[in-house]
Picture 1 (cartoon, helix red, strand yellow):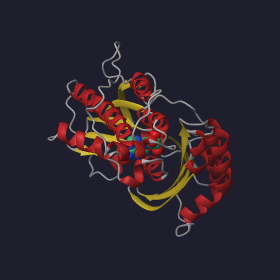
Picture 2 (cartoon, rainbow, N blue to C red):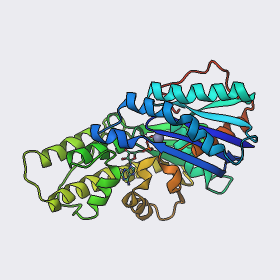
Picture 3 (cartoon, rainbow, N blue to C red):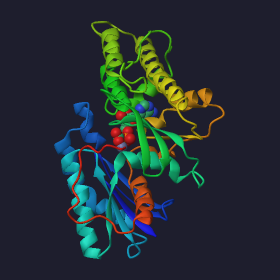
Picture 4 (tube, rainbow, N blue to C red):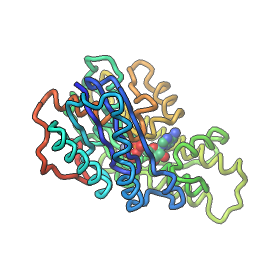
Length: 329
Ligand code: KG4
Ligand code: ZN
């Protein structure tokens, strides 16, 4: 079964063909990050204009070799920017009508989690701990099966990627700051500044990064900092934020017999994060998304679309609406 995936939740316009939920036949990603760079974050109207300009050519490129073989269209239905989501959704519906093929709406965040499962051997080891670390989302859940989750912790303010991006802006780095903060952190001393990540009273598994971000702001404010000082700030911030994640993952693992950890989202590209997880959980299998599936992409949408359709092969009705927020569990 060949699934066409379409992704337009934020600033990437992407299309991909995936065979039987695992084999990526094509994956095309057009990012509009270049336009947002000067604004320090995604400018929604400009992201939408770019989506509408490029979506058809991105889909055409993804389909070049297998034009007549599509069985299903899977589209990210949310969460995301409403205008951006509508462009992907309307395109998917139009293609579904034109080709007389079913279509299915997919939760973008669940697809981030599925990205790590796509490459992992089946049957997957469940129950497992799932952790999504992206620019818009940060949460932990128990995974009992694909589609069967229990949310156990989420951020009460900033997402982890958003915190990296904001700290990047404070350090004078362009959007998206995450990878640049990581590169700068490699040159710094992670123990130079004693920052703290937030603890949330009502649930020790919840995350809070806004206080940490403010501490970084005060460490930088009204000071003439050398490049070495800035690297120390980046390293201390990164170490604090990432160790908060391994600490909360440790807590989560005491609450149920997890057989593995699956991680998803753009922050999974961070090599220090990977090293910390390996160090902290040496005996547990840890599944990371491959680099091409960690940032926003449409292969993860197509892959999860296949899984969902196999379980319930009717697709979604044409009045399916986009959702700017979707609870995962
Ligand atoms: O998953 P994603 O593409 O977008 C959302 O669905 O939100 O993740 C993008 C986020 C950005 O905040 C970016 O700065 C962050 O992932 N990111 C990183 C790294 N690479 C990407 N953060 C820290 N270290 C990295 N190496
Ligand atoms: Zn994403």
